[in-house]
Image: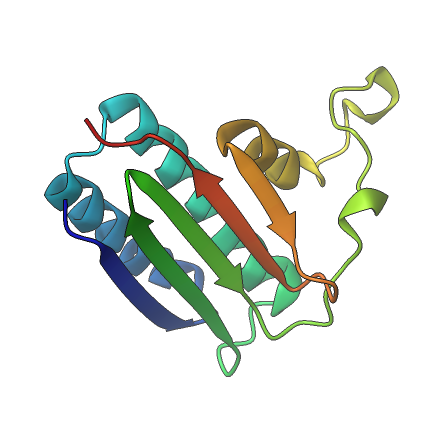
Length: 137
């Protein structure tokens, strides 16, 4: 299987999420990624990009969201970086706890954590890397 590397830089506009969606569609189709894994990859990536646009870059179209997609050895790694100040991922309340059930924030990171096989943030908190393993047949 060929290794695939794609890097996209988009302006922080919600409309640009379709550029990322199209890239995920193209890569997953070309690589023969399993349907179950495709859904996880797509939802987690769009959630990360949405967070980068709205929370990180505050929807400032002059700020860029950088998305790197690497497919290697049946594994896909996606890194989403914004130009924001960052945040502390451990400060996000657990959205599954009863006292947080009404909260609207925190669900995205929780969802990304559940969908990816592993997830990590850089020290600043403005970049997330998600790994999905054994995603091709």
